[in-house]
Amino acid sequence: MVLSTQWHRFGFLSRDPCYSPNRCATMSFAVRQVDPQTAVIQVGKSLDFRNAAQFKQICHNLILGGTRKLVLNFRDTGVLDSTGLGAIFSIYRQLTPLGGQIVFAETSRPVQVVVQLTRTFKVFKQYPSVAAALQNLQNATT
Image 1: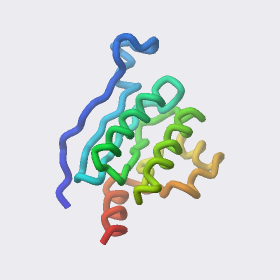
Image 2: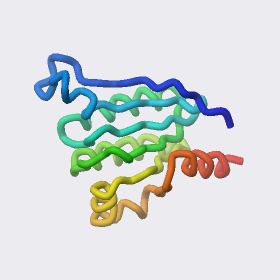
Image 3: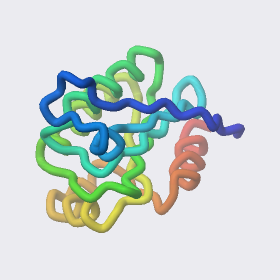
Image 4: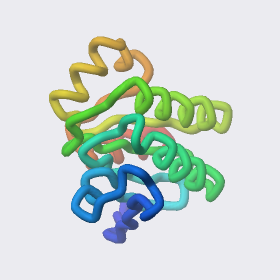
């Protein structure tokens, strides 16, 4: 499998009340389209009430474009609140009827605590790396 190295950055617009040029990178997402049906989303420093709507919009656009497998990379994420978790489940409800899947990769310690407390691990598979997640997603379709 050849992986694309092209990442697309999504940051806040200046009209957003949380916008600050210094905070934009901490509240943004990077998307890498691996193949027409698979994308990796690098979650920034947080997925919470401030950026959950933006996350949902990005994912919704990917789904409309044909993406059916999402790898959420939480390597650098320090905050995942109930709104962020709700956004993930919203996307999950969109993808499941389409035969899609969401998996977690490189889950940081703070996110792992949330995953354990909410028992989210029963719904979303977790992988130690993005490469392992992509390999398992590829094997699941062959």
